[in-house]
Image 1 (cartoon, rainbow, N blue to C red):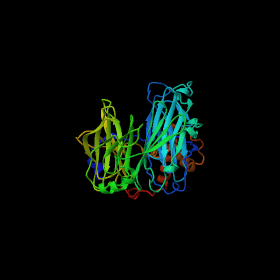
Image 2: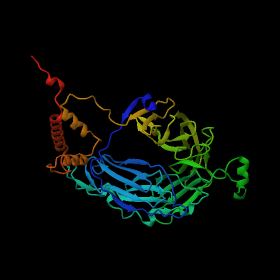
Image 3: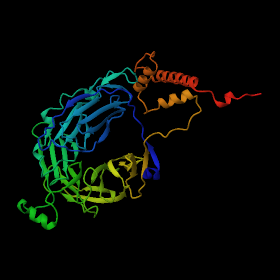
Image 4: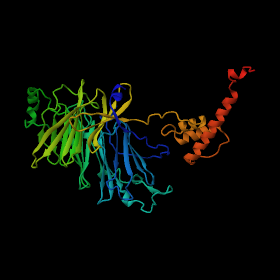
Length: 478
């Protein structure tokens, strides 16, 4: 905890309300799977979120989508602060040995009135299409607790449409290895583009998959910067001291480019519609030896600068140190692409679990999730400039000083503290303790508080009646 205690706390994490029972709808995605992919593949769990673009419409204001991955599923949830959503939890199961990859993205198509979620596994890519909130029930009265409208996840009819997924079994072999991360993008014409990184445990490479709305999917592997014929590539690779393949660790899609950070700490950019060799290669961002393997190796994220330009934030992870390198990508047209370094930000000697480049305090900042030696995690943030100033996010509300309350009230407030016990658990405890108590989970928080207060008072009276008298009570006074 030394690092957490040494930096200032500027933000506080708000614990979401998980008191409502969650009912999950489950579907099974077609992820293929062969003898080469059905193996023990371990990838870290990831999570993310999305808020709708138009926050002024009644159908999309205060409405969000968030997701997380597990080894055998993609879990999607839609939440609203204004209305109750039915069927808001969807669990997309995948075949054993085909875990989901990082790089999920959510897109809105206003013209088609659709919400599209792009997801990939180690053996497949998927375009998950759902109806937009604008086309759902518009008769709901906002502000009423009884209002319920269908979530976008209530309609799953098109998820396993053959036009909406593509299997990668032909790329799953021992020489190429297994994809460990992914980037995805939805074009204006509805075409989904995926870039999968095969960066460790094989020849490596970057696989580009295009999934049009109609017709066959297109996939091809992107090459490194070499015009040597294939039959001489092994010889020239040995002379250069480099393997013929290219190990890609992190990848992003931006505009018409696929950009990856590679094992040699260089950035490479390929045009999405041409393939072939990279159009631009940056000098190595570091002179360190081999990076750490995924999931603790190099990573790459992107952001949009205030002037509309593209900012790349590469995380370079080596056995002895780690750092963030902030780069600007300049596209001068006609394939003339250049990288320019902005600054370097050194991170703590902790394992980086994930990070993103978002908005905070009027500028772009890095939000990073670290794992500490004691197993606890910490979230930090830093602005994208040379003046490194890491700030921490308080994981929970610090315990307040003991209030001057009646003992029963103090116990009640502690039992009903946010994030400690869900109301159904408290109700169950009350029903066990007080067999005569009736009622159910539908009672309000105020009724639950009064019931808990009464139970605590009864318990305190019972304990007081059983406790022996204090010593001073037996003294004789004259």
